[in-house]
Length: 175
Image (cartoon, rainbow, N blue to C red; front, side, top):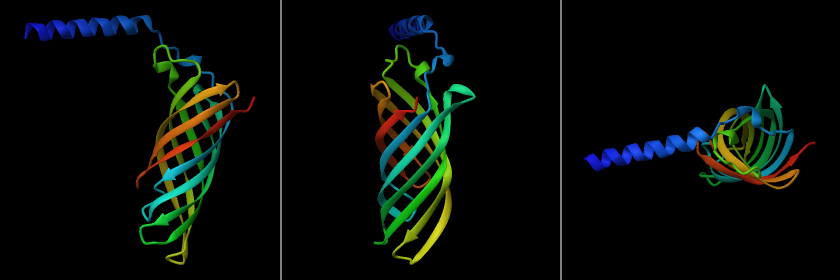
């Protein structure tokens, strides 16, 4: 029991010493207006088992150097569990918070973020011969790898009320 206590004290002291040297600066963000073009695979809604989407979005820093807001537009094709096809159009407002400053010694060429989209989607189904409009909200986490001054690879895992999808694509700084 004494060894466990000593081990915990040692781990605590090492962790405290590491983070005592790191002073996070939430004002250090280098977010700039960005354009994103990306594809997505995964679930669309409760009717769709699997689908693909193509998205375009813009990000503009607001209120805080780590927070961005902007429009997101998407369209795609999905395959239903009921053997139908669905065409989708979606539009929403995308918010992202860049949390690089929380990670000690984060290399400058990487960004990590959490995101959320609030919007609406219009579906046209071949199985039900109908169309519908519905609202949605997503929560995601992702990152960027800046391989050039104004261009980055983009990846994100997004969660919805009906499943998840994986986004991948390019981001371009609009400077």
